Length: 255
Image 1: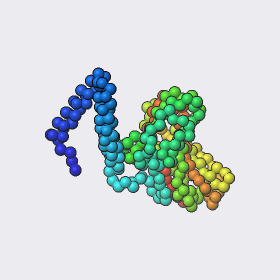
Image 2: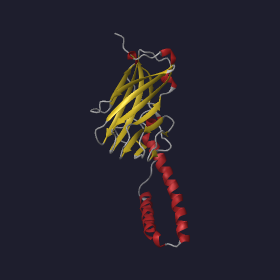
Image 3: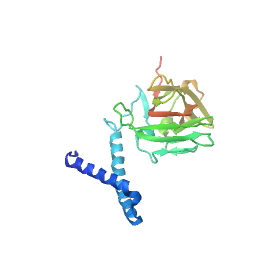
Image 4: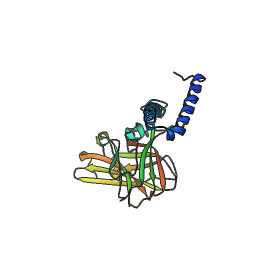
């Protein structure tokens, strides 16, 4: 279905002019008229919010199939977290406290006494987008020693994992100012936790980090849980747009 111009455009212009006049005169209205006007405006806003929500969702859908998630060759598991794959509620958190969840899979952690951190989800509507959504960190003052996003990997990531596996994090990111970003893979096996830290090469975007489990001491038969931390070094006065993130697992090529 397509909207038709002409009369629709004329009606839109008349409606905008009407609400412009109402906004200019609202300060002089009596309280009864103002109350009735507010009810009309709230009713209109509710419908407009519905249209915007549907438009954002539709525009964020990949141009191909909805299941398109890029994966390196020979991957036996691939995952794009919900922050980049579907609309979250809430869509944004201002003055975000430590431990605040963003959806069901992602949590923000920091040690600031006074948070000047905003985390929000934006629709990726650009032509060159890869994921339906992006996560954006806006940081003003930052007096803490760490800022991170933590996400639990699905159970399938730990299922039948072996030391001959390599995990890969593909990250598409844009920043206002240069910043160091690290990825830490945490593997719980029995009572122990193995951690591997890699730094993203921020000269490139997309960029990636690889975790070869051959260089760990994990007991593959006892792996219970795997989670990922994205760590942002000295994030003050910066905007970090995480435009896409994909985690994959593949077998190491045998020589």
